[in-house]
Length: 276
Image 1 (cartoon, one colour):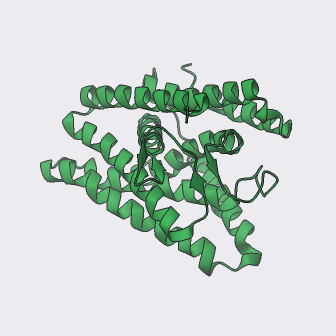
Image 2 (cartoon, one colour):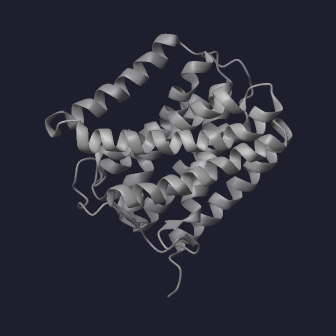
Image 3 (cartoon, helix red, strand yellow):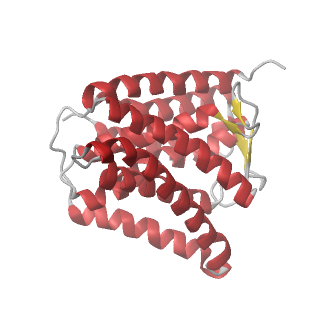
């Protein structure tokens, strides 16, 4: 069966961003920085596989390279490069260390709020709920998961891998990976099995708005300009690709408001990452 060109281009972009991230991490942090990026990729693969086994809430289309027949390698790579770019941006701000994982998670959500709804229309993955379900066919719980995926793993990195001790630099990313997976599975269970269904949307909204409100209250400023190129080009790559793929395929007009949302998220990314 021939490869879907939208899938193939996405995979090529992900592997290109990974190569750039690895080179950047080696130059910026050292070899343990390369380990952090690769830990992010492995974390992405592991959390996807574990979530599929735990919830059976979605399935992926057929990409060129599949792990265990269920998780595309490019998806794990996508997690790794998004996490790395989000950390680069957060590290360029005046935010205290404890709050940087929250900003990193919000930056990642900026990508997914436009990407996910287009990706399911391209057949990259399927939530099995139809395209009119909740957020353009994407469950609200997906954004809950994104928030905790990025915040728990990056918290582990900031508090373990960035310590000035050789053992923490090398072991920290792998401990952070374990902490992140446990955190994601626990928060998945919380929102799916413990929070009453009547409070499902409210719980997600309160957590997201509280995170955004906290970051705004802390009033972070950019202290390292120009921003690291990857902190800009990683989100821009996602926004540009899915906007282009959505426009070329026409799926971004199903419904037309999806185009408005995608442009708005791209505009937010541009506003946050501009170098002046």
